[in-house]
Image 1 (tube, one colour):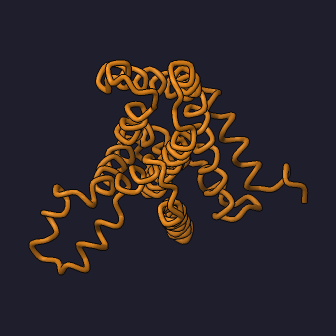
Image 2 (image 1 turned 180 degrees about the vertical axis):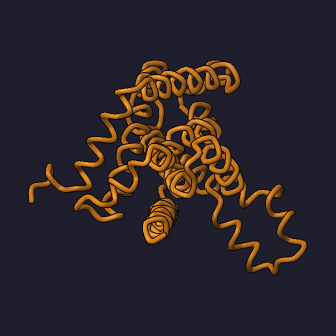
Length: 248
């Protein structure tokens, strides 16, 4: 079987094209580009800092993703369930894993496209000064991995409901908790009843801690593996939910 005909690639291509068959892709990309630039220039003090780097630009990505990525993820499976096409999809000669991975890759590719369209910001700082390009490359990678992890969360929660709004709200809440897992807001809620080992384990799940480490230019394999394993775990959860729905 050629790569182009592989079921996962076929699903990914179909889903990616579907984003552009509706206003979703255009709205998402325009919102992301406009908000990321506005936050970097106005709240981040892009020019006032007097430094040729993209730190103010990437600093706001986690908070943009907190609302924009669930908007992409909420339709992955909730729409299939609501329209009744989920059962049809799962009766095709394709495994649940191939369907889940294909849909995820399509969404992640859309997020990657939006991120790639911000490259003119990189050209701008290169024209203004002499930035550390290694840090910028690491920041782009960290941003894309974070977006992928949040999308995987959205995939699992979208599979659990036929209501896209419910999927969106629950994904925002779960991603917010995972974002701040290592911060006092979450730690204080856990430390009253949990031992230190549990606190450390919860802190290790913080999306924000790992992405900020990468954005400093410290491309630690442990941070990359954390996001890879997070994506894999939530996609596994998606498959389990779909198998349960199929069996039911």
